[in-house]
Length: 171
Image 1 (tube, rainbow, N blue to C red):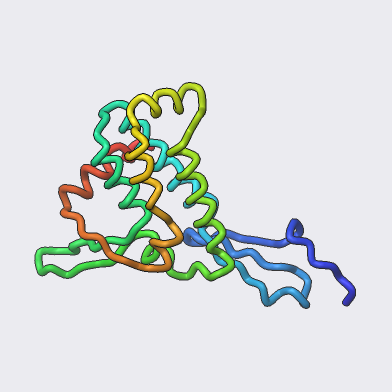
Image 2 (image 1 turned 45 degrees about the horizontal axis):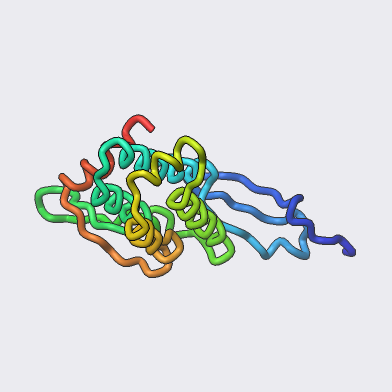
């Protein structure tokens, strides 16, 4: 086969929150990319934006910080009164992402950084009124890729989780 690999001609399908991308050329078929589905990525981006919009309204930086930490990390959920727990978060909700699929997590990091440093006329101006350079620095330490690779668990109470998720309910 004298076929030439062209990334633009890759085939893909999405299933259970994952996007499986592969080549139809047998010589390159061993490069299976497992990443987050486009729908899941859009859901995370929407939650980032809703978190910042709520911050603009409430000016509660601690809550914004918790929301971004929640999105980029992993956490323990108490399952029942017998103290059984489940792990959830960026790694535990999508553990089958492979090394080639980590590019989508890097893209989410870029999106987060662009949102933090937004210069968009309407959104950026409102955000710049309330977000200090120290706040930006604090938010910039969060990383989807690091949360996935390191698998560190943060602890949140059920009340904290409800407060964190409140602005995402209708988004």
